[in-house]
Image (cartoon, rainbow, N blue to C red; front, top):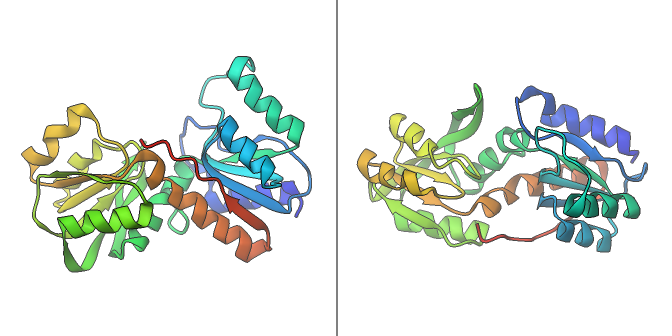
Length: 250
């Protein structure tokens, strides 16, 4: 598949221009014109680039890219990363907030479906646009069983701040670094809130507001979208895909 055709499809499917996002969403580094294999990773790191090269990928799609907001000089470690991609002919495509919020392949809606939530609806916003999801379990689940289910699906230990009901019926989800949305979830009357990483100053909020907060890792909660997007590319275009797993433990 020609690179430019794939990029145009990704731009439109993910609606990358719809969000006021500090990430430079879209094609960040131009690689080979013909794409037969696409690697996927959460982070644009040298280790991810090296593994993508070993896999024979023509394009790497990441959630966190190389460029954020302000121009960045191509020097030092940043230069090594860019040079590696150019030398190997590997393109880099990034989708940050668009891949959090997408209702088919997004981190949040995808994770809600994996966990078995029904009655999915928008939850929480990013600069005025919906980013997360809330839903209802068909049968209430104990907080312990919910944490176990998340650990089983994502493969990371879950930190639980048990400030709410023992039986969880409603859950809000915003992947990554969205600890403060525990307040949004409490205001919405939800039983629990799931995100990636905790924050020290958010710790008392769950207990004081009567809601459960679960933290399953910034990295692991954001493996969902890139893997769902990989499935789309395999099924729609017959492209070979492979995921680069490089967990940070955070």
